[in-house]
Every structure is written in C-alpha cells, then in structure tokens.
Amino acid sequence: MKILVVGSGGREHAITWRLAQDETKHELFCAPGNAGTAALAENLAIGAEDVAAITEWAAANRPDLVVVGPEAPLCKGLADSLTAVGVKVFGPVQAGARMEGSKAFAKEVMKAAGVPTGLAETFTDAAAAKAALPKFGLPVVIKADGLAAGKGVIIAETREEAEAAIDDMLVGGRFGAAGAEVLVEEFLEGEECSILALVDGEHAVLLPSSQDHKRVFDGDKGPNTGGMGAYSPAPVVTADRLPFIRDTIILPVVRELKRRGIVYRGVLYAGLMVNNLPDGRKAASGSDVNVVEFNARFGDPETEAVLPRIGGDFAKTLLACAEGTLKDEDVVVSPSCAATVIVASGGYPGSYAKGKVMSGLDEAAKVPGAIVFHCGTKAVEGQVLTAGGRVLSVTGLGGTLREAVDTAYRAVSCISFEGAFYRRDIAHRAFERDGL
Figure: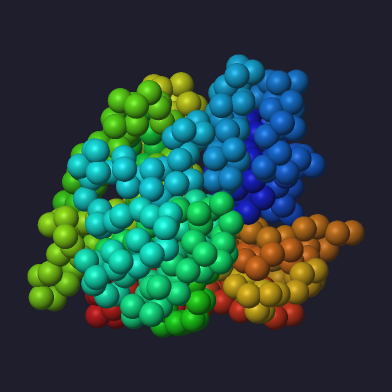
C-alpha cells in the first residue's frame, strides 16, 4: 500500500517503523517526519497541521491510507478534508476529535454514556467556579477545556491554589481560547494507566495496556512533561479488568458518539485511574476504574512501547478501521514486554537548546532487542542534531519487563549529546508491585 503518516515525533516514527515491519512492503511517506523516519519513508516538506497542503498532496498522489498521528490536525478537520477528496484516513473526524479537543464535550459524552469518571462542572465565570469549589473537596483539579499543549491541568492542593488557577485561565487568559471555559473536577486517587483502542465506528479492539511517566525526574518528582518513558503491559490493568474497560468505557462512548451522528474511526485513548486504595475508598462514581481523560490518537510515548508488541499486518488493521471492517483477530499481540526511555534535552520541560550533535545512535540500534525512535531530531550534512525537548524514545523488548527495561537502558547508554538526560527508574511501579 501507499501510506502517508502525518506527524514528526516519536509516535509517528513508531507508526512508520511498525508499518515497515509488515510482510508486505509498503510505499511510505511522512509529513513532515524526522531524521528517523527518513530511513524508512520519504519525508515531505509539509507541516502536520497544514490541512490544505496535506489534502492537496493526498488528492494528487492518491495514497491508499493516511494515518494521522497528532491531535491538532484531527481537531482542525484533517480527516474530514481527506474524506472529502476520497482518501481513506485512520483518525477521527473533527466532531469525534472533540473527545480530546474539548474536555467539557468529553465529560458530556461520558455522562450520557454512563461511563465512570470523576465528578465535574464546567464554568466560564470565575466567581461561579470558585463558589463551586467546596463541593469537590481537596485536592481539586482545574482543567482548561481545550488543547493546551499538555499544560492545561492544575492539581490544586489548597483553595488558594485552585482559585489562582481559575483566575489564571478565566481572567488572565493564560491559555487563550482553550482556557475560556474550565472544568472543576473531582481528584481521582490511585494508579494511572493507558488503554489504546482501535475503533472502526462500531467495533473496538483493545491494544495492550501501558503506563507512562509524566514527571521529569526519578521518583515521579518535578514538573509534568509530555512523558519521560512508558512500559507495556501495565500490571495494574489485570486481565479481568479488560472486558470491563471495553464494555463499560470504550464501547459506550463509541455508541453514544454514533447516536449523535459521529462515526468514530481511529484510536480512542482512555487515560484511566485505577483506585487500588488500601482503605477501599472509591471515586464518587463507585467504580474502581475511572476515566481521567480521552485522547483521539495514539499516545506518546505509549505508542513506542505498545506497537513493537503488535504482530500481523498492521497496515491492513488500520485500513480495516478506516473502512469499518475491523475484527478481533486483526490485532495480534506478542507476549513480550516492552519499555521505553525518553532521552531529553537539558532544561526540558522548560527552555532548552537545539542543534546538539548526537553520537552512538548506530551502536544503540545494534543492541539486541532495542529500537531507537526519533522524537525531536533533524539531519544536517550527515549528522543527526537535536530539534526538540524530547529527543529520542529508546525501546527495549524482553521476555519479562525487567529484561525489557535492561535492554532499553543498555541502548540508552550508547547515546550521547550535550545536555542529554533521562529517567533511570522506568517501570518502577511495576517492580515495586512485584517487590523487586
């Protein structure tokens, strides 16, 4: 097949890499791609959010499938635009992408579908939002409604912090239009995990569970990031919970969207909180598994840990989603484990330098069981330079999670560039659970 992958990060490199593993060889393109995808596909000088240019290219070149990686082009209507010119696309239409683009809309859909999630109310007036705080207790979560580059969620420990966050968004306009409406939400306790579901508009198949690490430093310290690593499977998602997640969380949302005239095709990503609390407390929903948020695309870095565990013909699976013909047997899962370590630029998630020369990439790729995915890189005159805060996603595979983690770190140890750093405790929750 001729396939275009839209995006430029580690997620898109992982998607492109996985498509390249199919027994049937595909003609692959990336818009715009990065230094890693350039070894597998033809990179196009088209930005991921340039809906008009991507549609124009697709109309002229007629790919069999377009796979959209990031959320922004989906929320801008890229899937709608491609469908209008007769090109099949893996990724939801703009109305479906509102499950990520509007937290208020997602909560409304969840409530209508009976999906367990935290209590929440939506406000556009700061005084009204502050007046509602006592009913939620502390800590309390304040969320900007729209896309805010992962920075629109504040967990307030005190009433003063909550009021400051509300003022910051509704009065100060910190996030612009994305923060013109805010959610005040129940704080959910427990352990977070991710489930990526492939959806064809009606049917859904769950991919292996995963868990990422949001905090920048070891021990889950420091500010939140886009993710400093991930591993799969996540032991907190026990086998008995998977049918519950599919039947009580994923499928009800797909059906509710369809009831509203929205045929959802692509990935529906459920960020979940499992309430494994020692005193037996549960969220207000009464469920021990609750939705924290939905995303409308593959997660990053979860994708880099999950896709290496997926067998079969991946292109045909994604095409089946786009065509509405997905079957359970289309998703083949390896029993292996995977762990991904993000190698980041010094200063991330704050300001950081770009253009640092990297070394050791070839050596890292030669480590048995290791895969090096590029997140923020560019190739200049035969050298690979840093071009982002999260620079590389290094994934290790193994028969056990410990083997996978050790493989990833062996590969990471080969890589160097000025200012490089990474967390050294990926999968620590899983190991603590097992007493390791």
